[in-house]
Image (cartoon, rainbow, N blue to C red; front, side, top):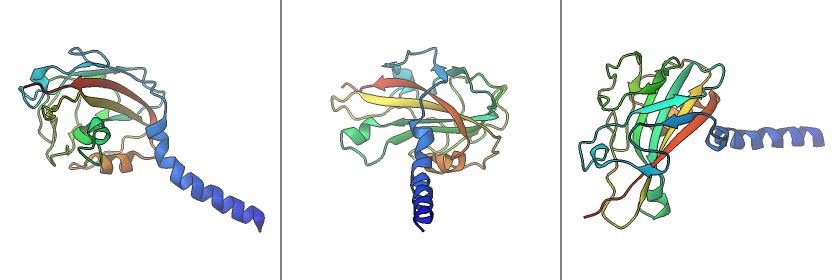
Length: 191
């Protein structure tokens, strides 16, 4: 009986731990952009105060067995400073072919942007409920905001439907994440 209770307790504990694995795994994928370095400043042009042009991203060191990729960009600083209860989501992209080495800057915000080598890729819904990139737009409150561009390498081509937001995407890729990588940028609105 004790072995049964121990087994059930282990299964319940794993059910609560497993969804955290991808979130807590060490970044092994290198993610870069031509317009700012890791911990650098996102240019004004790429903010919603500027032209709201999506940034370019490149990645390397994908794990063996990668079949597709996904991207989430959010701002966790809004939670830390008490503006919001969850990070604000600026970009959700999925069904990225494993053969792709990056995403070009200035990507269309259409649900299925027409970009060379990215056939089937989908712009999911950002924090405004719209498809595509939504650049930094923090208030001029003296706070330096943080933008985490996180790449997920997946062990399957999940061929996900359009219209997913961050939470729905994370649920869909749970158990399929082989590795992650992140490029962090910063932006502060000054008046």
